[in-house]
Image 1 (cartoon, one colour):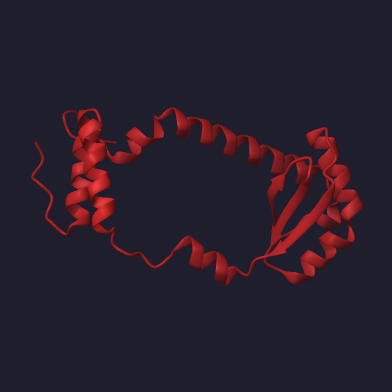
Image 2: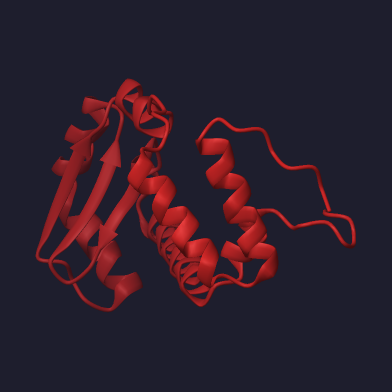
Length: 154
């Protein structure tokens, strides 16, 4: 929590944008679908898998374990039945992908490269159009990306 009179973190402003609110609402809806799908499945299918997509075309499940992938593929019919019960529309096919934990960890923590000059320029241009608290946060971000010290707080 920031103190009165101090700039708020950039996340405060980004989380209040309409696009962010829509995205969060969609993520919540997708999480509810995943919980409902898990509840509709037979007990032998409760395991280390995650729902990645559900629409009229496909039900996409992701797991880290190739044995679980085989089990999920084998039980395609009960999975598609469960998807139809929660979504109201039966997907045309089941897809199961195996993503090893190593690969997931690399995607979660990619090697961080400092932003290039074009990115810093873009941040500064965005700051010119932003309301005051966000403007200061963007300028602070640009200074940090350039390796310059932060200005003292106002």
